[in-house]
Amino acid sequence: MRGTISEKTFYQYLKCPNWVYFDAHAGETRPHELLMARLQDDGLVEEKERELLSDRQDLVEVTAEDPDEAFNQTLAFMREGRQTIYHGVLIDTHWVGHPDILEKVEGRSRLGDYYYVASDMKRSRFIRDDYKFQGCFYAELLERIQGVKPVQGYIVTPDSEVLPYLIEEFEAEYELTLTEIEKIIAGKRPAHFVTSGCKQSPWYKECRSESESCDDLSLLNRVWREEVRALEEAGVQTLSELALKSVPELEHLVPTVSSNRLEIMRDQAIAIKEYRHIIRGTAELPEADVELFFDIESDPLRDFDYLFGVLKVTAQGEEYISFFASSPEQEGAMWGEFVHFIERHIDAPIYHYGWFEEEVVRRFSAKYGIGEIAREALERNRIDILNVIRPTVIFPLSFYSLKDIAGYIGFEWRADDASGANSVLWFEEWLQKKSPKILQKILEYNEDDVRATHKLQRWIREHAVL
Image 1 (tube, rainbow, N blue to C red):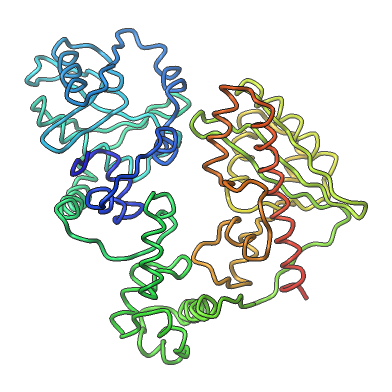
Image 2 (tube, one colour):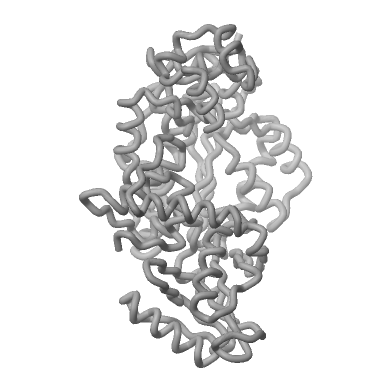
């Protein structure tokens, strides 16, 4: 509903304020598919949520689909003093909250000798700021409804751990953010600033197009708002203007930004305007008879890492090897097969792209165990290609995802709709239908990821290794 503020509005604002603006004021609406919305908001599928709630004794669920009816049903459960309310809806004027759980605790309120606190079930195992914004929003709604503001908000992790945080410690930042959101809903257009979070918005193409037409400085990769503000205050308003400046000029104009950072931003402005890469240094990549390229596919909606894909490259050729788990119960066996494979290749460098593979290996090692030989090999031989690229090459790209950079050097994925988010939706579809064609599409997507990593490694060898 246009003009409505919900807990998801805070997530959208933090990712891209123009997402909130377009949703409220554009001449068209762009519906958000349920699973994609849960994926973006770090939520879990309902099946996983019910599993986390399976031990609750006095559990009731709000089932009404109409928001007003759902609110009335929630209020009825609250007045009855039910212990746990699942899928509750909280409404006050144009504010609508959808906490995953409302839990009864002791205390005085309009309801009696108890009141309710809110919590959400998230796939993350730590409390992020956007969760706190949502928790403050629930707390304010609960205060209006029951007359008592909860002191704490809560996150329930996939491991059933309950993580608390104090509402008052985040309240000032929440109030400032809420004020900005209300202004946007009322018609104030946010300033342009393209970030990787904008990619999640259904309005990304519009935001990107406007920023490109303005030659906006936010198109620089990983640029901070403070850096853009400093450049603009010094009279450097566009990428074109930045590309024409010498480093000494920039040092004089913007003394608050380091010389190295100014040079990187200037060089990237040149790269983007001329659509060419710039080699800034040399990379060191080990020589080996066997090289491994590694990528993981996960279903974060179920907290389930289901596919470890490896491209094995030798002088004799290339071989794609997949380690697959069709259910969470098979994760341990899949991990064991992968560890055994690593133990047979203890001298091979293991290339991957980004931090995710490292995080999953660490988590699986703790959860399922790992022998010392494999542990040593994984720690010693892992090479993050993204970390190799950043100090070495400036690409004419705003974002340095594997899809962006591999696409720039000429690699193409077989699926037209290839993306990490879509691979999650494909896997959800496969779980429902068990279609071999869908599974093959997932495997091909993973294989393309490791082949793209291999192509990028070869490109670095050709362009940035002496």
